[in-house]
Image (cartoon, rainbow over all chains, first blue to last red):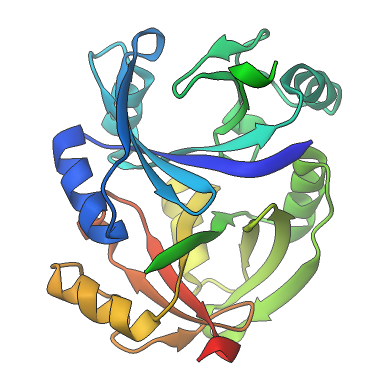
Length: 136
Length: 136
């Protein structure tokens, strides 16, 4: 089950500039920063009610965020939905014809297991499923 | 104050196809459809916890959604934040240097007053502020 819009990921060129800008916009400071080695990104998080805004800066050219910015510029990169059972949702969505970008859940930022769906099957929207590791 | 991620707007070529796809993805049906004449769009809404997913189809070529899809294809179009006082937030953000796309709030979908910020000043993200009309 999809239980929440957990976060919205936004690709930025500079986390320093992005943090300053979104602090002014949202009128709240980021509550944490984190690097995700496997994705080659540095991230920061802002909380708005039950949803987070995640800023993502590429740490090297191999990062998917570097590719995204090169192609499309800065902007909204993905929507992450919290699910109550990531394995069950991955199975359900695969059976519905969606393409999973990773066949087994992988470790993402913020102590989550995550799985991405191919945007070709979701009207151009990069969809992330995520579940808190401590809930497993 | 920014009180919630009220909705995420997604531009689709066909609301019929989009509704079918997002019903499969989210495993829930849209709870309403609505046309917004002023924006030249037909919309539908899905609820996920406290946030809505809004699908937007252009009703004619003058629609901003038609322009968006022509340039970028289907995908995430905007993030809408619920605010507790839209006039105060518009004033605050203008003073912070953000560019408002409309100088006075206008009527949007879902019984809201809305204001958009120019994406050039927000890392490429089209940001909508919205407030329920009945709260004014």
